[in-house]
Image (cartoon, rainbow, N blue to C red; front, side, top):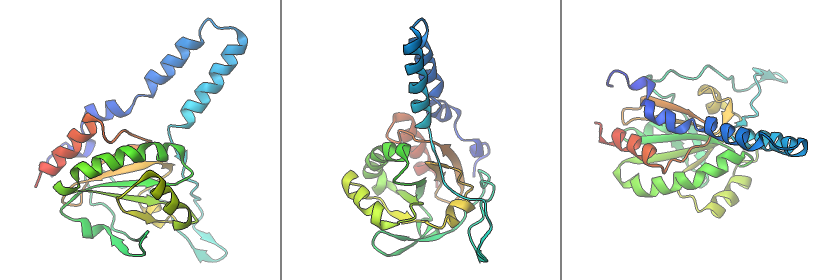
Length: 219
């Protein structure tokens, strides 16, 4: 892997950190308004900021009633091998990360109850359709406790075609240090973690596509 890749391109990070402009806009609107409107604006800011990410709902407990459960670890370092895992998809098939070696993988942690997760999914589908034949893959790992009962109708309503995997016991989420949803990781063709992304993103944006194209062009 080339040196410097672990920190990911600065320009991509800048594109994805747009909340400063959102809060500045709200502040500008609120200034000079009457008290009633100030209260409305403050409530609006809370609603906007709540859309950045959702708490994963994960517990730090290591044991429950004597049964071992997943342990949340520190996020893996960028530039290190992506932790392997094996999960069940909507068709009941086992999917393992090593099966995707040689592809550029967008690993997305999400849940149906997470509003920002639902918002970014259509952009993921668009870029997946355009780049899947070039070696791009998406693995969307749901932490919904109900599993396919809730993910299947959601996938159908959104017309999603990339693999949906289930991690209801948080074992894989824990191994990746997931604390908020959505959280995404970009993995290169060699299985190396390139970038960790917090919160919902427009994966169909020119900047995101440029990053993915760059990874696809590497051997």
